Amino acid sequence: MIAYTDKIRDIARRLLKDCRVETVIGFRNGSMPMMNEPCFIKNVDDVDHLIWDGNCGINLANYLTNRTDKIAVVAKGCDSRNIVTHIIENKIKREQLVIIGVPCKGMLDKRRIKAMAPGEVTRVVEDGESVRVCGAGFEKTYPRKDMLQANCAVCIHRNPVIYDELVADPVPEQQNVDRYEDVRAIEAMSAEEKWTYFENLLAPCIRCYACRNACPLCYCPTCFVDESTPQWVGKSQNPVDVRTFHFLRAYHCAGRCTDCGSCERACPMGINMRVFTKKLEKEAFEQWGWEAGLSLDQRPPLDTYRPDDPQDFMK
Amino acid sequence: MSQWEPKIVAFLCNWCSYGAADLAGVSRMEYPPNIRVIRIPCTGRMSPKFVLGALREGADGVWVSG
Amino acid sequence: MGVEPGRVHFSWISSAESTKFVDVVKKVTEAVRAVGPNQKFVKKELKVA
Image (cartoon, rainbow over all chains, first blue to last red; front, side, top):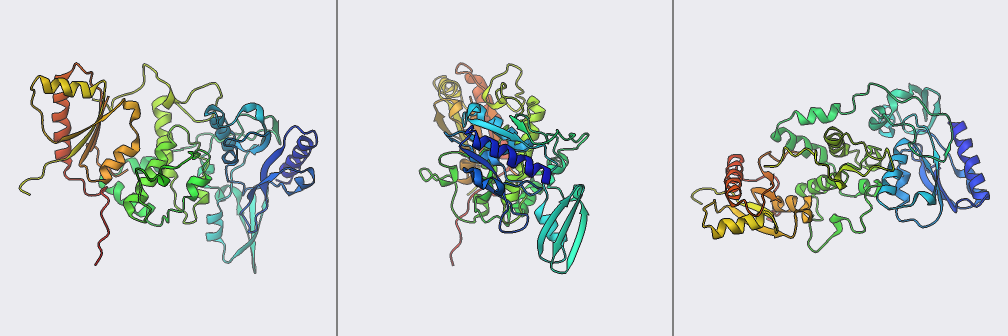
């Protein structure tokens, strides 16, 4: 990880010095352990703020929407796929970007680490294949692969799909991963069971919209939840309103979501709203063989017509 | 209420199903009176929020037809 | 997602197919009648004592 950090800093320093870019978007240490925050570096002197470790789960493609300046952006596998989606959707031009690709080994699940630690976590150190969690009066070591975010554990695109610079050699992709085990479990439920399952899943939601704000796909100028004429969704904690919000947000991500896990990571209540987007991701894969953000030359299935489009749901 | 009757919101495309509904009307065909037609300029105008909106407002069914 | 299948329908009818239209209306009505009244997704007003 230190090697990654050094390489990112070197590249950022060079790009800024040569005036290839005006801004470098990357991560710096947050004020709490495991809470790295995105940062915008505009000055060569600030380059040493940049870091890289297993807590860089936020998707940086989110900060590229409608930018007009030249930007270098640090991108792991899922970020790069979202950058591709951004380019396809005309939210940024490829020429504006210098993509610093980071072969990713998966991000750490901060909730799981916090839950397993016997006290308050003050420091998390990654050491190759293990994670050392330190706090007042304890120090524990766990295997890194057991501490990954749920979406990283089933990720099959760890290496960036587009990049201009690569900070390390590509990592081997995971093979034989069952990506949709959880979705299939829900699909097998009856309508009644699904209703209850989602009722419980969404019960803690406080409608802070952190998931929407963290999501690189959610760039509508006015989100439907903020529209007032007509008002589609009430502002209250009414369960039907909460459900409408999550369903509709998921639908907007259909065929675009890369399962980067930003939404779940950003959620203060720890809700796994990824089950919605993942279901639609599965659907896009099964119906059209589509995985979002893998190529710049292919239009997404929902904005193209193919004579062999499946349409068994129609009468 | 003697017997419950379903209330169905039908989103019909102006050029397709709305025309068919019109033709059914002028041909004096009979069909169940449970549908409430909303004419949309094209099925492309359809949005998932209409479906959810209709259900939230108490519709028992939604039918989208191009 | 917990909304019963049979509550939401999609179809494709040309403007000349009035008979198909009548058919589909009947089918849709029957299907919705079969799943019964929509009680779950309706937004109910909060009861104020």
